[in-house]
Image (cartoon, rainbow, N blue to C red; front, side, top):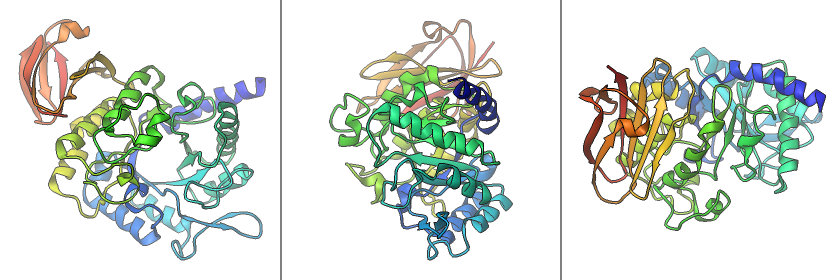
Amino acid sequence: MKGFSLYAQTNSRKENILAPVPPMGWMTWNYFGVDINEQTIREMADAMVASGMVKAGFNYIFIDDGWQGGRDNKNNLIPDPKKFPSGIQALADYMHAKGIKLGIYSDAAQLTCAGYTASLGFEEQDAKTFASWEIDYLKYDYCGAPQDSATAITRYTRMGKALHKSGREIMFGICEWGDRKPWYWAKNSGGQLWRTTADIRDKWRSLESPKSVTDLHRVGAGILDIVDINADLHSFAGSGGWNDPDMLMVGLYGKKGPSGYLGGTGCNDIEYQSQMSLWSIMNAPLIAANDLRNMNEPTRRILLNEEVIALNQDPLGQQAERKVKGDIWNVFVKPLSNGDYTVAVLNRSNVPQTSGIDFNELGLDGTYEIRDLWQHKNIGKGKRWKGIVQSHETKLFRLRKL
């Protein structure tokens, strides 16, 4: 155990370099599934630059499942030669030249979720391969693996150590969907972020009432279902280690594919805006999943709100705490590094509601200048706010003490 403790302490210093704030970027899975290739991914990188997303902080592209072409005669992982004829190293070079980092995917079993070659038993070899390709991030899934926690910890720790020894700083995303409570152990296994729930679907909430993280695999996790799990884990997040409630659904509008499974028929722009607000204040990785080459104006407005992004990237790194938890209202408070506070007011109901929020009752003493971050304007001064909140809307305020 002394060796493990030494590793954890050493890796903790490394984590603070790799993930002082949550990563931001775009991932292939929900839009393309396994139907990916190097040309499409290059087009997404071009769109990230042209749209202003890279300037706003979206500086990762993550290749999810389906890139693998098996192993060569020395058991080195190789990319699918039809999908990636130029190789992953060339793709990484293309990304780095644009100021974008490149992520890749594997699984802690023999095969990935989609049935491709995975990394069990080849952790050190694969980590060195990823490093040689100049990969910046590894999403490590858990399909095909045993259900117990002890095996998961062993397998993730093995890959965490392999990445640590690879000679390159590679951020490690632990993706076992929250079933084994990774917020307790993932950081000591080398992770900089850990999934807290089942895969998100493109819907506001499940029609059923899931009672556990595991239950969400069956009914399909909507935005609100995931909020109800991730919000209660605020004490586990901080600089170098983040709760990951999965990707942003913004701009998908019910597209067929992975995000459309289990009732993912799409959301409206108010709901997508709420997800952006809630993911930002919960310090979630902000990972877009829509077609960046063809964004409508509401999608651009939501993803590129720099005042909202600033909450997510605030160096204090403190996840918002849910102070009010009711059937209609959720109210969150997030302290910021300059002494300001964020207050988010979510209307969970299916009709507009009038809300009255007393800041003192949230533990915020004094009088504040109130700025609405979606209207981009100061809306008043005082100790409270009252107004109408649309169904499934999240009002997002930044408070500066006077």
